[in-house]
Amino acid sequence: MDTPRFEPQDPAFAERVRASFARQGAMHTIGATLATVEPGRVVIELPWQQALTQQHGFLHAGMVAAALDSACGYAASSLMPADAGVLTIEYKINLLAPAQGERFRMEGVVVKPGRTISVTEGRAYALHEGREKLIATMGATMMTIAGREGIKH
Amino acid sequence: MDTPRFEPQDPAFAERVRASFARQGAMHTIGATLATVEPGRVVIELPWQQALTQQHGFLHAGMVAAALDSACGYAASSLMPADAGVLTIEYKINLLAPAQGERFRMEGVVVKPGRTISVTEGRAYALHEGREKLIATMGATMMTIAGREGIKH
Amino acid sequence: MDTPRFEPQDPAFAERVRASFARQGAMHTIGATLATVEPGRVVIELPWQQALTQQHGFLHAGMVAAALDSACGYAASSLMPADAGVLTIEYKINLLAPAQGERFRMEGVVVKPGRTISVTEGRAYALHEGREKLIATMGATMMTIAGREGIKH
Amino acid sequence: MDTPRFEPQDPAFAERVRASFARQGAMHTIGATLATVEPGRVVIELPWQQALTQQHGFLHAGMVAAALDSACGYAASSLMPADAGVLTIEYKINLLAPAQGERFRMEGVVVKPGRTISVTEGRAYALHEGREKLIATMGATMMTIAGREGIKH
Image (cartoon, rainbow over all chains, first blue to last red; front, side, top):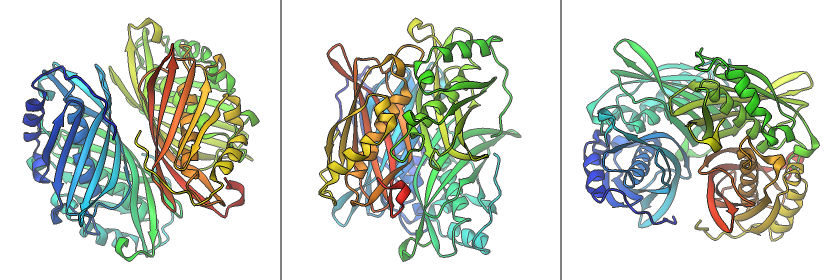
């Protein structure tokens, strides 16, 4: 995807994103790791696991969506102030092909950052027998949460 | 939600849905169970687990979405012919409130069944301290897959 | 649709909604009228017109969406404070059937009102040869805008 | 946007798309014209008109959506067989900024073509005082309709 260049407000954005990601039980459970954290762009990777399959043995779409939502959320978060948290208001996902592969890469980018609302897009790719294939696209709306202790980061 | 009444084409739809659900590694991993299987309406339940949390200790939105997507998919599947499989083309989810609670209930209903395309809606509820709260709404488009062995059910 | 009951904050909500609707050139152009304005629920009606068709002579989906978006936006607006404006952040529409008919009815309801973000749902119906048919469903996210003169109402 | 290169199945795709567009009453009414028709990519342009405004004098989001939906639909159609028609199953639109400007440009591209289902993305831009601004993004799912006379093209 085209990635517009954005200036982060928080110079420590990458450490903040990595610390928040480390607190997500669900991302740990599905074996996801943070591969890239740039201003307005985050990449998450995860391997195939039997425990995460749907009925045909492919990665469950819900797991694709969970990792893609996280990539989009952290992409938005990377451009937010240091004390802000991020919440997903909504997302839409198109599943283009079964999530068949050994590894998966989810990329989230900010299309338009905003003080309250940030709009992001995501793409999920499957790495299967040496080839990478686009398997899902996402459009997600994120909200900046400031000053609420329970929702921080 | 209003649930229009639909006639199933396959008298054994409930057994078919239950057998398919049992093959989903991901649903087993997140502790989800099939509570209700009616023509055009499926309810999935799951308990809170530390392993499925986001960074604030609430259930990860991706897990809410995964279970809700399954509820919508099986609702569509319940009205399909015996030899058909179901694939999610796309869904959109609005997250209305944090998934805070001891248990969660995801309900999927068919709005319009079709030979190729079925349109469904889902609602997720959190049961927290004795009260049930609407936490997410979904709109999902499902596709009937016929005659492809790998994608059956 | 189920319509939860909501208390309006602004006792003059209906006059405010009707005055704002009257300022919409586009609604006038497509012949739309406000049929119902209740707290959290708005119905808009419009007749078929040759000028609004797509290539098969049905009402253009964009016109269905425009009227449905307005119904959802005003449903959200009806629950907002007197000095607030409403903006559509995003919506998703599923087109269930061609918009074939003599008249159309678009209903928007609030699923969850909020200080900043309100989530709404819409349904569009075609009246054709004496029967009403569901032709589209919408999920829309609305934002409350306060204190910006240019965006008022 | 990145535009992957696709091979059209129908060498006369551009004439077919232009002929279909010419039959859309709604596109004529809103003053839209077809600026570009390439395999998998279509651009539609329209001027601002008082008759198409919302309550603040900006172009109504429904008109932005109508033209963007058409751009996405014709982008999908350009890759379909000669005798196929196209129907929008669903789309989601994020409205990033008010549609303020003298002219508007809507671009639709195919992300993944398919025999039955094609996935597209759209972007709408406003030209205002000599600068172009991204005002909306769309994700749309299109369906190929074959052999139904009433829905041709």
